[in-house]
Image 1 (spheres, rainbow, N blue to C red):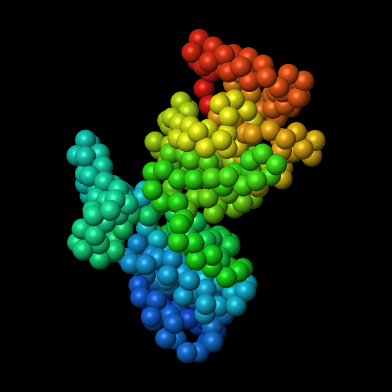
Image 2 (cartoon, rainbow, N blue to C red; image 1 turned 180 degrees about the vertical axis):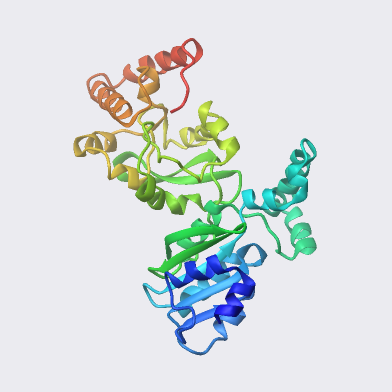
Length: 344
């Protein structure tokens, strides 16, 4: 078994696997497949599964992960293999040619990432590729695993391939509506604690929403109040966020009566748990808004700066419910236009 694994991967990868599972144990299923039938057809009980084939070549990735989940007990391990965007660029010779490489990878991205999301083009894409050699980001692969009931334990890269060690912790969500397109809805806490779907242009890789707890666990919060070193963010996402372009679809929520133009940021349940109790109570009494108080008050986008600005706004809103939003709106516009205030 050791010889076969090393032949398929390399000795470093074998040593990495061995630090987590007993590769030659009868309780470990070592397989190289892109078909979940080969997982489900394995009759013997196993407590660890290693798949040496790339996730990039699996047609129905979530279905495959769900099948792996069904063969394991809680706390059992699954090791998967992917090739990321970065590794793919480094592997291809065209990646070393200036200008040509940019054109090539842009066209490849349109065909292999945009086409699968567009009705009609999706059929063409899968007809030509059969779902093989697809582009995957690290964030999407990790997020898909989490959505299918796994917890990320670790990951390492050897010779251009990333091996992910994941632990089964629950049953899959079987989420048929996971965010994948350019426009998606984020679950956020609204007035009186009601959960609302806040519209936004995508700035993160698909399935990134499943990784918030993981990113916070390994990196914590940055000064901006957002997760530090957040690998879920796409290159173009940084630009969209800086100039608030990603938040323009929130006007849909304003028309639906779920948000106001001015107000505290709509936040996730996870972030809500980390703010002071008194601020939680104040927040729940008001609708969230598109333009946050720290912009109107020209404060830093740090955690403390944002929370203090929200507390001041909410306190003033209670005292002056009809004029506070108007005042904050014009102050925010002034800071954005004349002081060039940008998103944290």
